[in-house]
Length: 321
Ligand code: ACO
Image (tube, rainbow, N blue to C red; front, side, top):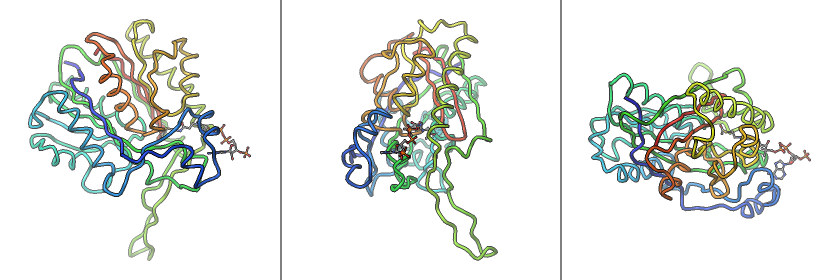
């Protein structure tokens, strides 16, 4: 058995912040952001939104499209680095909200690779016959871990959530790869809470994201094509057989470089970064949901999904729709 996607859904907060809006609160411009990243706007959570709220909305839409009863779900995994709470997990909160009373639920922390890692964990359960139906979520509220005075980093990110209902079937995921390089973690990091307790006599501090943009850029343009090439080689698949390369929406220039290295036309890489910015774990399931709802995927189409992010982490999946 393997993993087949039977429903997708996504949600982004109502507040849309354009590059021009940002230029009013920091020293930046639409021209700088657009020309270096392809980003034009991003969604930012209001007071009553947040990672869990977005995840629930995306999950409801995926469940509705799949046409299943939430009680059929055996497992829920939320890929998120920015949950509302340390305890309980975002996955458990989604479980409660949608009434998936028979599911086990938990979170996976793998930054922008969170959705791919979660999907592949489900694949492991399906291959071993343990579970049959799952909900995989990618959701992140990056706006709350940004230093809004650090223009090098904050202009890139936005908030959102995407989800997929998957089922154990004969066709679906053909092969997957995942990797991590923890030694390179410091190029993109955010401390959750510093140490602070009755022994240290201090209260914990909360950190904000810091990023070495050029290092992340170099990593992405090397690792993603490498990973996709390996995936194709190991399955004996020609790149021309792939209808779409669904990539983590980080930067338009990264897409262009990946397309060049893989020798695939840009038309095969769906892009929505102009409207969302980088939504980390949510970016892949959001673009997947858009492509799916536009009716661009037909049964039997081969697609590659690939992402990279903090950790450093990366992953790729080859699947038949
Ligand atoms: N507006 C205007 N000027 C700016 C801004 C801004 N928002 N940010 C930086 N600058 C200035 C800098 O101060 C610098 O000026 P200086 O030369 O006078 O010092 C100049 O622009 C160039 O800055 P660089 O940081 O060198 O810009 P670079 O060309 O490297 O582009 C960028 C930066 C867009 C971040 C690029 O490095 C990049 O896209 N990296 C990949 C990042 C990424 O994809 N991260 C997501 C990872 S996925 C995850 O896990 C979340």
